[in-house]
Amino acid sequence: MLQHRPFDAPSTQAAGLRQASGWAANRHVVQPAAGWQRHVVLAALLLTGLSASATNYTLWIHGRKGGGAPGNYKDFAYWGPASANGGVNKKAVNWDGRSRIATQASRLRDALDCFCTGPNWCYVAAHSAGNLMIGYVLDLYGGSARYRKTPVPRADGQCANSDGRTQAGWNIKWVGVAAGAAGGSEVADMGSEFPLDHDLKTVTARSLYNHNNTRGAMFYMFAGASGGLLSWLLPGQDDMWVSYHSSGGVAGSSGGSFCNPADWFCDDLTLGKLPTQNGRAKWTNHSVLLRDDGEIYNHGPGNNWAGIVAPLRAHMQLNAR
Image (tube, rainbow, N blue to C red; front, side):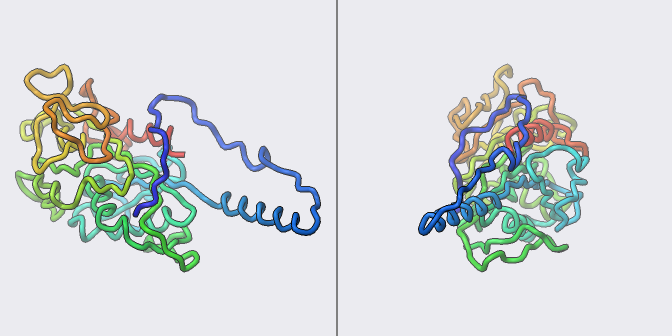
C-alpha cells in the first residue's frame, strides 16, 4: 500500500512563500545528565537526527514527445528554464515520450524509488501523458515492495539501496495534473504517429489500468479550455489536445462533452470531486482544482512553463514544500 500522509487540501492563494528559519532557531541546550537520563537524552538526539534527514522532493513527469534526457533529473528541457521554481527540490522525470506506457514505466519507478522511499516524501506534478504514466505506475506497482534508496542517482537514473530494507509502495503526498490525458484524446483516435498514441486513444487509455486506484493519493486536476485548430475533433471544452472529460478526471469507459458554466447546451465540468452536471462521477481521489472558465490556457508548456502548466507550476511553488 502506498504510504500516504493525511493533509489539508493545498491552497491556491498567491501568498508569499515562507523560508525555513534554519537550525539555529531550534537549538536546545542539553545539560549534563547522569545514569539513565543520559540514555534518554542520547535517544532523543538520535531521533532528532533521523527526523532532520527526511527530505521532500517534487517530481515533474512530462508528456508526449518528451524533451529531457531519460535518467537526468536536472534536465527540464520539456518544461522550460530549469531556474523556475517548481516546488521543493524539483526533479525532472524524463522518459522517451514516444513509446508505450508499459515500456517506459520503469523510468518513473526509478525516480519514485530514488526520492520517495525511506524517510523521504514526494509531491508529483504531471502533464498530459504524464498523467497516464503516474496513474499506471501507482495502480500496477504502488503496492509492491520497494527497496529504500539513498537519493543520489547514477547516470542511468537509478539509486543504490540505503539499508537493505523494503517498504510497500512510495511516500507520495499528492499529485498535481495539468491537461491530464489519463482519459485519452480523440486526436489520438484519429491516427497514430508514435506507439504511445495507441495508449492515448480514449477507449484504450480508460482501460489501461484502474484509474480509481491511486493508492490513497489525491490527484488535483488543472483543465485548460483555450481550444485551437484541433478543437473540432474534441467534444466539449478542450485545450486543443485533450477535452475536459480527460483533463477533469471524469470516469467511464468513454469520453463525453463537458463545458464551463457559461456554455449553453453542454453539461458543466464541476469543481472538486463532485459529479458532472449530468451525474457522471470523477475517478476516486480526483478533484478539479482549476477549470478554465476564461478559456485562456492552452495545452502547454511550450518549453516555457506556459499554457495550463503555468498555474500548475504556481501551485507547486506555493504548496510543494
